[in-house]
Length: 181
Image 1 (cartoon, rainbow, N blue to C red):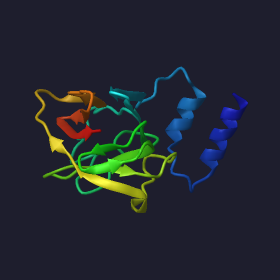
Image 2: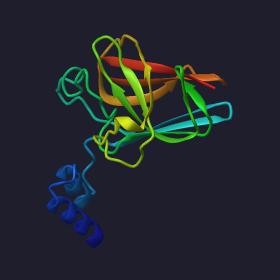
Image 3: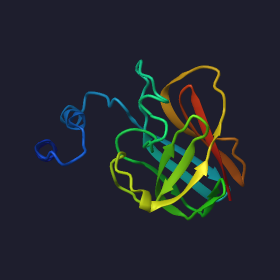
């Protein structure tokens, strides 16, 4: 507990860090649930395994797409730390070859089409984005949703031994990209 308190004190004392103080308040009182709890999505396509670790924010009455998640700006695709993608094999995300290893994913929402961004930087806070570390950007496909979704989710669907779809859903938005071996 002492180390946790010391870490929060140091974080709060530094005005140059982009870490919200809410995180320290929640660390100090571990009985309170996180506003955007940690989540994981995993899939196996034959011998290839993919895991995405992210934090899932909620709508909570806010305007999300085109509001909290603005058009024309890179979005962290989750909350808190940057969302990580780990793959055991080289895979194609759309037409982008992604090597085995750990990467960070972001999205670039627009009114016409979203882009999935695979970035080589890892271990950073979600708002720390370095475009020079982009492995590439892939167009996503929009799919209509029958009803709004309160909690953001990342999932894998329509999985076979050689392909799957990576879906990002929140509010009234379902954007996905096909992944193949």
